[in-house]
Length: 77
Image 1 (spheres, rainbow, N blue to C red):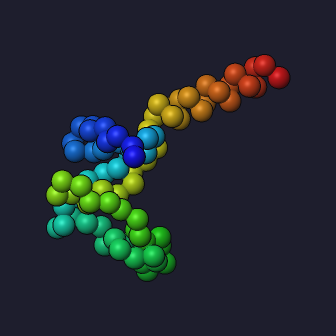
Image 2: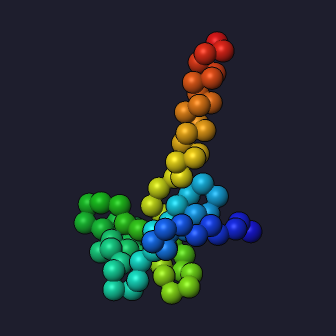
């Protein structure tokens, strides 16, 4: 099981993924659908402490690590 890291504005981080919190009244229109009017719906989420969390983005630390690794490999070859 992964640890939950609490960020600003009730965002949470699991591993290298950041999730945005929503209350029931604020859920996006495409929530709970596989497809919603020609665009991608939101079919994956989790509930925790009164919020519904939906994937927002990958953590910057992971992106910076990946960029640094690619730069190093390019330099070494």
